[in-house]
Image (cartoon, helix red, strand yellow):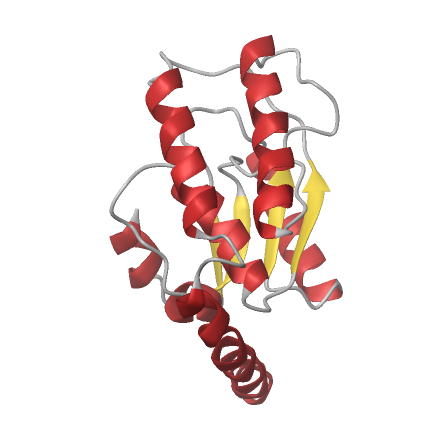
Length: 180
């Protein structure tokens, strides 16, 4: 995923899982939301309500991760694990995420928000999966909690120092983007 994110050449980068669970027809709407709300990330939340296609235990875990993330990092979200987002390219180019282990979407929402990027959420329908899920519940829980902890606000001096730098980069990137 890291190579794909860094190789993108357009202003907007769209991510989604390739298991037919996400409605690709809403991609233009997500991009329009990003532009209209002057956001840096649009996160397509599956959890406006519990999707019929999501097992109850997955739904409970996802809601729990959002509560934990808000307590630990201060970032509010309804769906940290959504595989469908639109990013401005400069967010992915400038935010120092760690591609080395699972649950990357968690960090790619929490971290940029903590460093000053604007993320908005919009609700989408979540469809029945095509194929067999590769979800390993215990390992997935551990990596999700690790990502949240990695992004924590008050114990991570590196991230705290980077906040002002990221805000300055964001302002600079916006100026360059508008003049391009």
